Image (cartoon, rainbow, N blue to C red; front, side, top):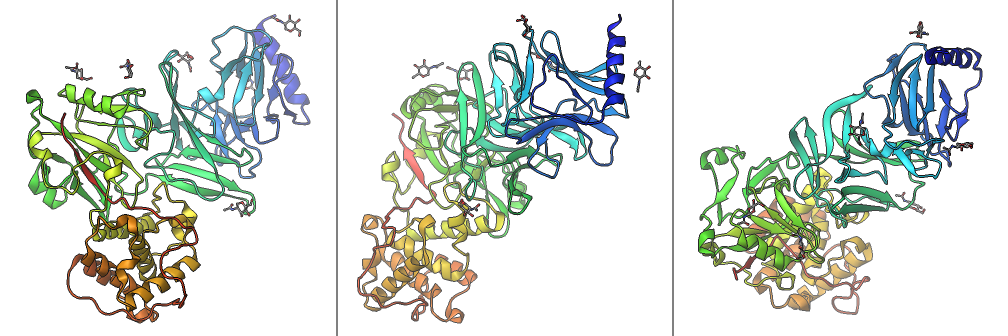
Length: 611
Ligand SMILES: *[C@@H]1O[C@H](CO)[C@@H](O)[C@H](O)[C@H]1NC(C)=O
Ligand SMILES: *[C@@H]1O[C@H](CO)[C@@H](O)[C@H](O)[C@H]1NC(C)=O
Ligand SMILES: *[C@@H]1O[C@H](CO)[C@@H](O)[C@H](O)[C@H]1NC(C)=O
Ligand SMILES: *[C@@H]1O[C@H](CO)[C@@H](O)[C@H](O)[C@H]1NC(C)=O
Ligand SMILES: *[C@@H]1O[C@H](CO)[C@@H](O)[C@H](O)[C@H]1NC(C)=O
Ligand SMILES: *[C@@H]1O[C@H](CO)[C@@H](O)[C@H](O)[C@H]1NC(C)=O
């Protein structure tokens, strides 16, 4: 008998006699899915079945979170071949091991199984992965290899360099149409891997090189969510995944049809999906806003661009730059002299590393080897360790202009890059002469304070989280003048564990500062480890300013703009009155409840001489 007729008979039988729908846990030779049936994962977290977007007649085979009452689709099979109308549907395994979606008698969609295997079965795992296994339980096809618009924990982005298989997200055409849209999220083919958001071929946003530790440009997650990144960079595979330690947490990262990459998690108490973050966030996130060798930062008011270094770089087109047209970027003031072999490198810190498309990398090289390798090749413009910290191995070389740099403020958060410079530029006056972490000192407290001030404000205004700082800690510091005065005193006294700031600590510190100030012993407030690196008048001024900000009567405290003015000028300051929370405690100075001391990293420039 003709195969089609058999199916037709089977369909009619199933279709017209069907009264109950079933929840299956496996699809096999003899068990198949028809309209209304679903395939459910072992713990009932995910469900596969037929899904119809609101206000449409289209039907899709899809996977959604069964535990979330609002239909939350995470994967769609027949994205661009919807079914419409009342014909019978069937999802069935066809020999040799191909899971196939039939609509009436026609084959609408099937798995791309390449291994021939009899007796295959399909199940939905609790991770949301639809897997097809052969009789030896070997996976012969899995939905995680064909991502749609959603990245679930454990799912990979990247590519398999052996099979050529690629994993990236593609947005839906619209919120009601799962057909592939023009937006994608995933790594480029070339260079050190990093995820890029593209509209067609145009880059819209990138989040910095992949790193196991954390991303320069992705906020850390708040509260109880514990995420881990799993980056694999080998000769056979380049991939990125995020792993959730607690798999009872329902979460997803989705590239929506408007071009935002959003991470949501389900909060059972509220019965709501909560948005954890959405990228890109602001104008500095927009790709290459400032052009080559320039960095973007957000000030209190707006985004602004600056050459990587105001001394060694100049705008390519000064006039346009002054008008606020930054697209031309910057160029080195002095041309490189590679042929003479005298170039060296200048280190720039606290930035989002530039676009990595035109980079070369070797993850087993250390930084010294990396520098030597870059120095040898005249087209190498910079080098860096792609991992967030300077510990550990890893070398990346740039063979193009440095694009899409973003400056970060307030702390030892972002990454360092070593940019090639002509030898005459290496000897410029600068605070630091030596190489390496150990020699980072404070340029001078006021700069640091200014940077922190701006950093905290942009954090607050734009929702940007410096990755090191947990949300809870950060939002416990309110951005008012009073808190700023806490802040100043803490920095000066060398206590900088933002996460552990407790009200008692503020009070104790302010009381300790006030007593010493009154007795003319302010210098004793300063952390011993900083004693070599400050300028006493500036520190005294900072302390006085800090105390002005914490005066008991709020009306006596200067407003933010006066603070900024006082930070940047040298005029005499008022005498502070007694602070709020003043407690006349016995013990002098400096033991915080957490007992932590630290030094401060501001925005730093370090020089390295050519060898
Ligand atoms: C199913 O397909 C057959 C053959 O193409 C057609 O004759 C029949 O009308 C279809 N049935 C439905 C319900 O669409
Ligand atoms: C099926 O898989 C092969 C090999 O992985 C790939 O080249 C091909 O494009 C895939 N086809 C579809 C429709 O996904
Ligand atoms: C498939 O399963 C049947 C019954 O379980 C078994 O008899 C048959 O040998 C299996 N086929 C293969 C190719 O192993
Ligand atoms: C974190 O977990 C604790 C204990 O399970 C709970 O009391 C608290 O509300 C949770 N916090 C958040 C932000 O979910
Ligand atoms: C990568 O670096 C290591 C250590 O220097 C070296 O042994 C290896 O040959 C390099 N690989 C490539 C492809 O350059
Ligand atoms: C410098 O690097 C580029 C890019 O990798 C390469 O094409 C070129 O051959 C290298 N030149 C030398 C002299 O090694």
